[in-house]
Length: 313
Length: 320
Image 1: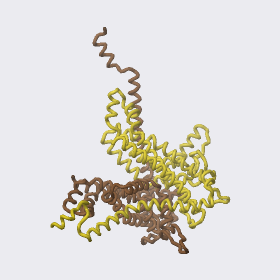
Image 2: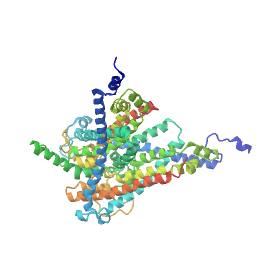
Image 3: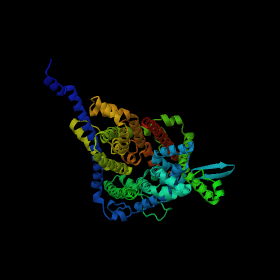
């Protein structure tokens, strides 16, 4: 019979098989760490590459000059103004529509098959490639979608806007609408039911409850979603190409019915040229675009933090 | 008083006052209209793509479209086989998943199983930034940075081993790399969500049996979350297929039926951009090719999205 000491010694000694298992476990965790570090490094590298390429071409005139054949004189003024018009109009259309749809789904609609259909439909729309929305916009807003010949009378469906800001904004509205709806639904769901019940108990109608209690409480969440949606609209280029926004335009747009370009399109146009100097201008314009996006995202964070902390339930 | 008692409001929100009730129903109808816009959008997409495509298929047979190996709609004689465009799209997508899959899954596992809350909370915003960068930026980075790096890398390999591998100025590999990093945040955030939703009890049971961290992660947690991870990959694939500006800039515009990632290809989305950025007159065959390609793109991404949603909803039921 072995002494107690030897039993103890053996049980504390890890056999080679177990040691191997722990070794591979550590290798695995190192690999996982490595992938995370790679992801972060790539982001840093990406931003560094843009700054490295774009910083030399960054100058004040970039914001105020018209595009030019000469890269050293090229500016993004018309694209900047075009982008501002686009996102202003897109927000104008998509916020009431999206918030309205979300209120309908969360506060009004009974759990019927129709509501489920709309909900599934919105989830699917969020996954439709944006270039497909561009094709929809091209047919629906830029050219007449279809002519129906009914008993000798020709019916046209759609608008014939022909490549103007309004057509671009309507198309972008359809692109971001699912995002606005989903974000608003989330914000509405976060409002506790006791607030609605309290309001009803005081005799308020459904709309009074929504308008005076639920919406104010959900506003920070809705605003965060709206800002993120508008940021998405600001960066979208594919649907605008499809509705026929041009990459090169020599005057700033003056209203919703002007022909236009937008910042991502101008960047795309410059980057697609063979001359390397224009690639530098494209990178400089990216710095402006990403700068605006970062400000918007920071705004979203600020809204969530600043207004979110006042509400406690 | 007694008359009011007769009209007790059973339905919260309905009111006795008739004009107020009319206003209420008007508002609820308007809200219904807002929701209906999303349904009309879907109907609009289907109607537009179908009407134009049907006219296209009156002139080009569906069989030629689906099996033809040449896509030269602008040349004489014109060929309308979508396989080269599909091939370009698949080449970029497969490459992107090869880049984003391992890195994304590794990052998700690290964040959910290993990282401290502090690390997790500081890495997640970084990935959100990655997700918020417009795709045209990725395209520019591909053209200005990734492609030159790739070419000089291959040149160095050529010099070292005496090989003669050629890399086109526009190539599928560089598009794959940038698209891979575009879809990375999607894979990470969705996979991390499902990994974290695996109940703690499963992990603890495995540790109690003497499992290492690796055993727990790779043999218990990941298989339990597998359907969710599959859904995340499906959504990422669908995003990569639909990605437009980056591949238009990086992959080029020559529809080639090839499996070589170092040559120029054209994706379905890049074709649509190339045609619509010109001045295509309505009603021409050229105009309609865009809608036929768009319909193909829409159907493929929709199938993948529906599959992913299905997997996700089944998964949700499992742990609720």
